Image 1 (tube, rainbow, N blue to C red):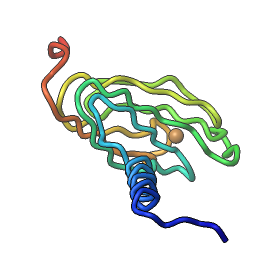
Image 2: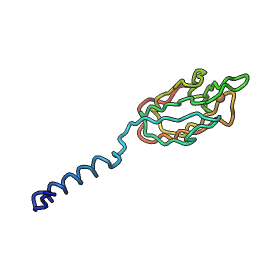
Image 3: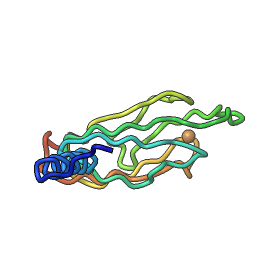
Image 4: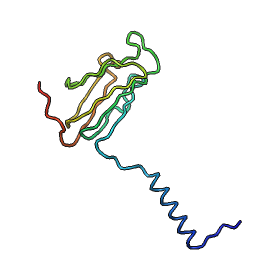
Length: 131
Ligand SMILES: [Cu+2]
């Protein structure tokens, strides 16, 4: 084998390794970000998501079967009525942006176990909603 291990080659190898380490390291989260929540087996995964204001949060319906009566369709409602999703079935994604800080708990209109909370931190990007 004619593999040379002079100082220059070693330095080059070090540089290559460092580049790989930097490339493989998880990138720092930048705000605003996007989160995907999977709805599966009538549960939200993860049930608790923390994001910064301005983040767009999406729910993906990955129910594997058509449940009787409701056919695996979910309709998410915020406990404080700040948002309501359309009914969306298996394979369909729905999402919304969270522009105000707070803890937003939600549940499915038809499946109480399908619930979770979005914890939003950061400066408000929209005025409070009128009631
Ligand atoms: Cu549901």
